[in-house]
Length: 426
Image (cartoon, rainbow, N blue to C red; front, side):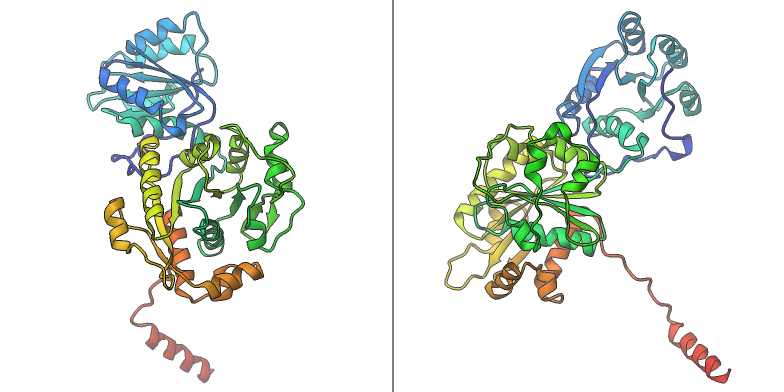
């Protein structure tokens, strides 16, 4: 049998969500598409190169429903079948025939057109998991395939935010830790900070934590990882914020393969709404993979020439590697350092061709006190403008604003006086 649909007709949106909406990555699945037009075939092939389908094995054939029926007479069906129909009246009959050769648990996505004569209710009855009105683009295909699993499995799929410095020593770790604090405290999302600088990481110091276990235990024992093991490795910083700390030890070297951290990220995604990666300033296979695979990226830069060059290079390569995602963001840090020649924010933005989302001022006294005391800037001075900047960055990266209090009615003062008078009379 083909799997049951995940939507009903009334829930079908007339307009697709915006291109920068959050799409959770698909698990390791096989997907086979049977297209009728070259345009749809090209869109599906392009989707196969998207980072969110990086674990999926996707193939494309032409011929539509008829080709699918013929193909599966002798071979098992994949996890997902994508069928394109050009509005012909035989789609229902074709689905009936496909059901006779389709393995249990296979999900079916139909790409139709405005001319389809088959009502959506009938498609649902025959087990269609999703229906997309063509013509489709790359993101439509990505969203449909990923949506099958993020919606149907009823599990939390966390958003990964990667924060990295354009150059060493620019304070990207400090920004990452304070932004994560704001996400957990002010945006009220359960979050985990992962310190990926195993040799020199400072997250444990910044959060005043000294856990015995952390990221090293996870990365060197990937076969034993599950949600229970991961929970034991996390250090609790606040009610909503946990830390997967770095050992900050030089007793061994930390050379990793490209996919060394994949199982850690995948495990945490299942239980944690927001994961903040503190990525060290280095360019290796695994750091590039972590950045490309993140849902959102923030580059932290100081206002000088080397940072300008590096920021531009990083933005260019990451944009090219993530053509269907929101472009990476950047912020300026330590702006206004005394006696240091600086490139202005306007000049920086002109060269980068985009504005920084924040320009964090240099304040050695406050940041030094926070670092030495193992505190966040918000704990040192909750009303400082830098604290507000970290909150704004957190809101921008998560796509969530502050919870606004309901606006009071213009009658509120009168009602308040009447209530007070009534209470006094009684």
